[in-house]
Amino acid sequence: MTSTRLPAGTSLEALEHAGLPAAEVTGWASAAPGPDSSFTVAAEAVRGFLGRGQSLIDRLPGRASGTAGERAAREIIAAAMNEARDRFLRGHAAELYDTLTSGCRRPLRLEDLLNEAAAALPGLVPVAAELKAESARALPDKEGIEFSQGLLTAHVLALPRAGRHLVESMLRPTPQALERLPELRAAGTIDLGPVRLTRHGRAGILELSNPRHLNAEDDTTLGPTECAVDLILLDPDIEVGVIRGGVVRHQRYPGVRVFGSGLNLTHLYYGRLSFLFFLVRDLAYVSKIYRGIAADVPGAVTTPGAFGGTEPVIEKLWVAAVERFAVGGACQLLHVADHVIASRGSRLFLPARKEGIIPGASDLRLPRFVGDRAARQAILSGREWTAGEPDADALCDEVVPAEDMDTALAARIAALTDSGLVNAAANRRAIRIGQEPLDAFREYMATFAVEQARCHLSPALVRNLEQHWHARERSL
Image (cartoon, rainbow, N blue to C red; front, side, top):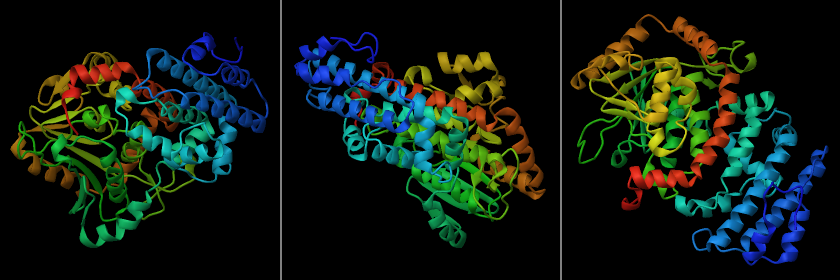
């Protein structure tokens, strides 16, 4: 039994050997979508094929409990379904995006876009109930359904018009930030749980506070961090944003500040860190630090280099205060900060090789700071930098003794704000447009979306976490 519309090498016999009914296998294979010029016809065809494929998968035991043959059958069906999704999106991603966004007139965050796509075309991406069930599985036992989210995101971002619209939609302020802005304006401080925000003079201090995990980031910190970034950008009394790590509770670093230890690898291993974390983090709060926020507020400007000159944008200078270490995602923040102050001896590195994932947008940005060769050494071979050593000067603007961080931070804020920031913001925009035009970021994130999905669901990531992080021995 063969079907020219299934991926090359698909073995239908292997599905029957796993116990699936021959008639259903044959019917599913014969329904594999072919090339269609009509969006409606193609959507109906892929919907039927994906539905029948999922019915076959549902007949098999879960990945954790199945035999080798049953696991192989699941992988064969999943691969064919992903091939059908990819073929459909290659031809119709633009029409799908226009349908969901009313021709790019309706801004949708990525999370909402995926939810609406799941409702509009069942099977294309998972629905909320499927994602909830997947989040309960440890990384070695996941069914891999999040891959389709990366696939759809990649196809949308690869389209200049739709991709720009999605990138710009992710730069809008969150409803949570708009709701809590009056509270910040009145009190000058706001507690967002794992993130605290304090207005100190003309600076907004964003303090990440995940003390048990050395200020690591995960699904619980992502929303509050973005909300805090939004609030700093929205509050007209704040001129400079500051990112700093809070005091941690750890036997090796008791009662000291730590800038950040990157991903919460324990949560990642036990399935508590969603794939969407990677996409939303870089498209939302990290991008807002780098590009500003699309909002009609005092101080916003419209320029040809921002959003095609169609929306008011506000951006501010950002200072990173690095203490002890900036690992992984924390190190990535140094690439979008305008000024980095580091305590002497702080370690700066991207453990991408040991983790087995792509370190956000560092592949795009790090070479601009340290050069291509050193960036490859860092990302592919684990090279580290130590603040105060000559080779780290490309990542740090100031290096001070740990006890002098508060003084240095206050002096830098004063220096940035005393002479006005109009020209600083203008120069910041000009530098960014020359270094990383919006389309360069869009194209990078299109590749990142699908490649990170492969990494996230790879057995190699599981092995790396067990070997280098000893994940099996850790508890949540």
